[in-house]
Image (cartoon, rainbow, N blue to C red; front, side):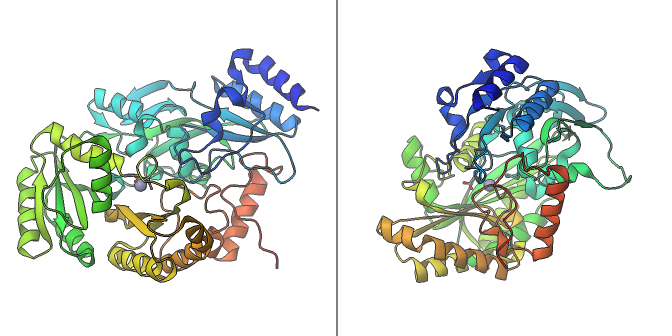
Length: 475
Ligand code: MLT
Ligand code: ZN
């Protein structure tokens, strides 16, 4: 059957206005960093679960593979096609039309929504009901709950509330044979056997297409206070984090590391005033939240940390606007759109045990100095979770020299991460970015189990091929 038959049948099934030529939607075939691009023969925008199931059956009949896409904000290239090894055509399925909040229970603390609902939409709906959907990160306006489920996304609130996995009560999933599994449940406890939803969470669209989600909501936080503080030495991070956790009867809801390189770039790009006059190599952004005011807790923590020689200076947001400005700065420090040569960077999304963050940063800096002198490791992120983003930029080195050393540098940095008991994929998934690198992280038996699970769900490798599961190495 030809590609034009495939497209004709898709048009017949979901309607001609829901089937697009990729040339008319170029943003769907490139990832947000502009690093991964992939060809698709068509892009389909189903509006219902039934339409998703019909699209899956048609693609299966025509031997086409399916790449499901949410907000396309993923950092590992999981949401754009790769060239299929067996030459099968790729179809991108966009779930942006499935954007309804179906129901929200203020007493049950849950909401059931379609997969294309954005994180911001979900946060707003929860907030209107006096509740909170806790997961949060910079791309909240575009990232969708379906995409977040697929990557087990993280963000700045993981420290207090856990990754997306901890916020999902139920799922509806269309499997590669076109069957729909209705696992939309609002249970807090269920010990009735294998938990299929946890297999789907983090599977990056390789096992099924998530179409509806029931999320957990939390009571809204009534009081928050945020500060930005200049750090004396990066080797003190564990002590700063320990003091910060102990410093409130409320909750430490965020602890983020910000490098001066990031502050300077954001201030320069947006023409903002510097948030803190004092300059240091590194800063922390810290937030307390609670049902009682937490301002004095934060002020006391900062004073204690200054007295112990851990911090030199700090600014506490004294208005909602100032607080938002500090978090906007955090949203802006991700390299795409900020750092020159971002596309060439060696990117890491590592996590190590929370008491080893300083060791990890030292190891990254030392390895870069040894192997790629002149390169600039840009390091920031969620130190409260031990999750550090590293984008090694060419810096002052010659671009070709940098690109020549990049693979060896990647291998060395991955090994340093594993030596510290870490992971090279904390919250961005594996996608295509890490597919060859992840093989060193786990025992072979773990990958073999993943391959077996994939075969069980998707024997024809129809869904998002070339992602998540590394190929078996030649023996
Ligand atoms: C962030 O925390 O800003 C992101 O996960 C993105 C990044 O690694 O650049
Ligand atoms: Zn992050």
